[in-house]
Amino acid sequence: MQSCPNPNRKGAQHEALRLNTRRHAHLAVLRERNNHSKPTDTAPTSPLIGIIPFRTPGGTLNTNGFAKTEILSKKNGSWLGTTSSEIHLDATYRYEIQLRDKWNIYIDDTRKLAFVVAPPIRPELPVAVNSKSLSHSTSSGWARFDKRHNLEELRKETSGYLENLSKSPAYIEAAKGKARITVEEFITDWLLKQRGWPDNIKPYVKVEPNIPFPEKTTLKDFLPSFITTLRTHRPGSFVPHTLE
Image 1 (tube, rainbow, N blue to C red):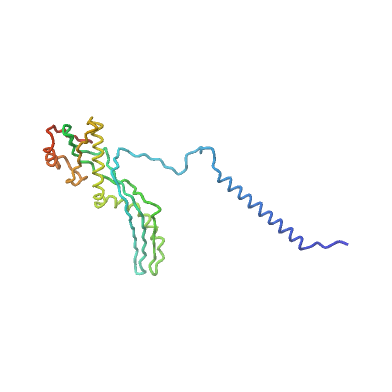
Image 2: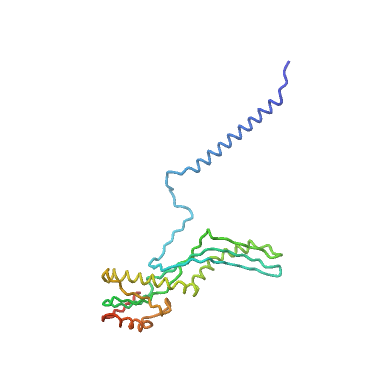
């Protein structure tokens, strides 16, 4: 007499086989992840994909910079309502002078004096943005559904907006004061090293503050002020220089 197979036992065997198969699959996934996470000892044999090399002309004097929180906004309105988007970010503006541009320097080696009219300061582009400071908000008009599109359009305008700010008269004016100090230090070091002035004598170097620096000016614009300064020092000879 044959015994009937136990259906409960057969079901338990199928369940055990299914669990065992899942366990082996899970272990295989873990091994694959572990292999990918291990650093390779060999250096890549080909250049990194996506890198686009470029060169800069060089010859710049980094003068100064400042940081400022900027708020960019964009509104799009109609009878369907107004869609508004805003981006808040911390921007860092840096400025420089091209050393290849024209310099007007008036030097008196005897009195250790120098008056300077430097080339215009220019912003370094693109303006740097701290990504940790980025935040945004956007909302659609009552019958509009374009808040995401409006925000995306505002994001695309960010670089151009910051560039225009960096070139604006207000921002250039804010940068002038610190730029003068950097130029004075640069010319002082140049006089000490290139003209053989003694290290123990600090030359009098002045970027004339009464001239709208760094607009286009010439020696004639500040020569009266220079002569007034000369009267308070020892007699000597004038050595005009134009560096281009």
